Length: 97
Image (cartoon, rainbow, N blue to C red):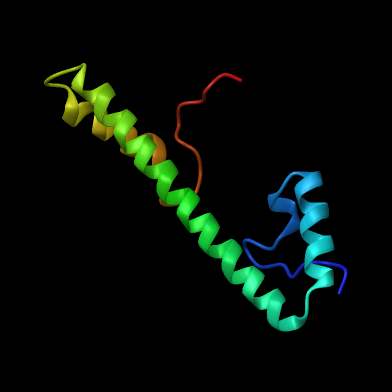
């Protein structure tokens, strides 16, 4: 097999071109059993990376809120408004850039 399956962590469009090329080459060289193990490994690596990123973001946010005592409720409400959209669309406010 010279292409990756289109699962979340194995989708070559998720990676930079250089990383994707290396992943495709490695995947093609593996037996089907090892391909499955590679997919599981990438899933776990991604889960770990997301957990670390969320922990850093939560820590940073806690530091920001600590600088504005009394505004935590308002800031948390704004953050939720900007981050969570039930329909998947962006917040009504647009960020330049």
